[in-house]
Length: 330
Image 1: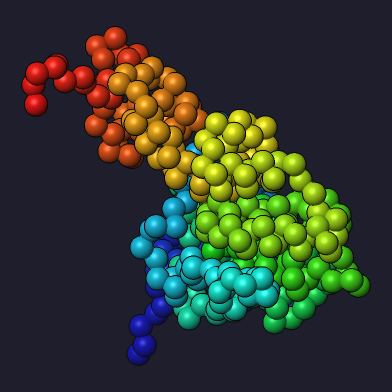
Image 2: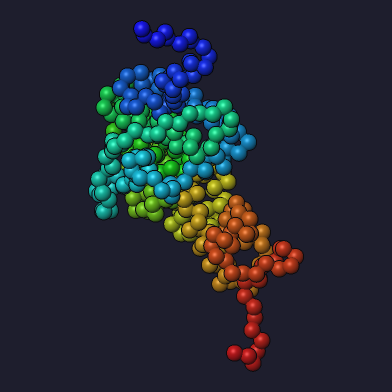
């Protein structure tokens, strides 16, 4: 005779729990998006708003938490692949490679389950940026409304700029300005000027490609009457290493432009430190911090970052740069 089946109980039902599907992040579980692109985009926007709400008290630090120096392979996070310069700049005499191609990830990303508690900002940003990249790839494979594609790119570019993540915003800028912006479907004038500003400043501040930056500014002016006093001031300050003008204009611009300018801040600060070291025997600490870091760093942070060997006085305000040697001694 066959044995009777065991009676169902709370204990026996626990074994079936292992067969239940895992709770996955909705942005990771969809794979490549071929349909419902707008619905997926709305989920990304909602996640971004949730991110801003969760880290409202330290939003700037939360955006800066994502570092492109982390050890990630191209297959694990294709958004971190280094971008290349636009090909149209070859016409101006610069040796720039062709525009970057969109790479398909070779393996799916690891699903992450959003916690009710405040999650790690870097992992949240990585999830959002990867989801935006998947959406942009889906738009390339299955084109939707060009207006919708433009909206996705503009949102992603702004987010990636705040996150200081060039592999996410630089290729998107090129595609938006030179592929999606067409005579039949032009970008609105304010957004066109805004995106051109980001690309010009990225070429100058991050890539130090001054010729390309000026060429793009001239081309933009000829094509759609581009004009920006702040961009002119920033380009002049970066090219001439004028740290006084650099920090002054940085206080006047919005957060997006400030984020792009931050790529040039370390180089500008080193120029200021060298000039101070050649000119003074002693100097006020706060003035050094203002000149070399725009007041953004503490003294210990500046010393560690730039390996400064100057001595801070006992009063904590005066910095001894060089000591005068007494006469008669070598």
